[in-house]
Image (tube, rainbow, N blue to C red; front, side, top):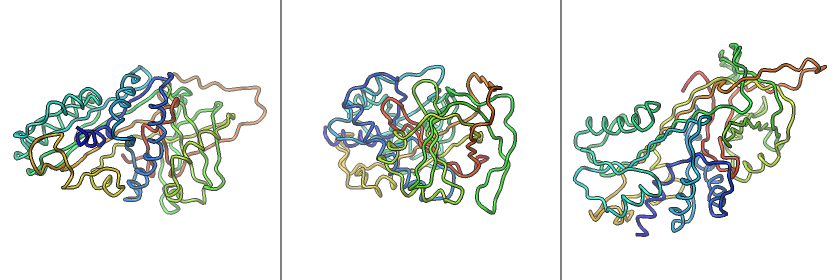
Length: 365
């Protein structure tokens, strides 16, 4: 079954959980720490392909023999609460005539909550509709079209999708989010709704990268670390140096300070074909010669594609307090995210990245 477990690594990499702020085992913590470094590697690979907005849910890496048990522990710790909306769908779609090993189907259902669905890939339109309808149903209509075209020769297609929206622990003011300037670059300036809040935040600065890091906590044990390069620093220079070690270092350096924060309201929805990306990173063996005998007894079986789509909405959500301290003699420093920035949404108890993104143009998805 070891070959099936290797394939489970691929499947498990696209399934993600939101975890309670509770004590976790050392094995789960170890997996989460490994996830941080791989998440940064995957981000660099995806971000380097274009100058567009980026948003995805990163992979989890670990030793193949231990991944299922670790993911089961994460699933047991997972929760959906009123503060965090986390809707996901994950499935392996297989050719209608393909007989999948029962042991494999049971494993991915037990450890990853994923389905195995048969579709008629020879009928491209029907299979496209079936896949998109499945995702739409699983995410409550939050994520719609995951696949646009389907190759009739497809045997196996791995699909994952996720929608995230959270309530801020320190909500932005709901009374006003005025249109303000956002500098995409020195030649292009746009107007965007800019959210505002004044409170005590955790902030760090990295002089080697020339970048600030601001922690925006959500309710429910999850936080967003927003990375803002200095005005004279291109965002690509931050992209290039992202590592798990740096990410964890920024979190450790955070210090509480009174701060005014302005962040653009934005919504991102991005889709990626990951088979080639993962092969380029050398993480998974998804070549034509990969041994998938644990999945099915059919010879010469290969994974056609892995599609991942992620969506996030960032707005003023939460119960806004919007208090003003009349005893303050001078206004606190103001941090304005009015130029391209990066962000990592992570589970605070383990510092495990759940989502990563880059905002170049807040008006585009």
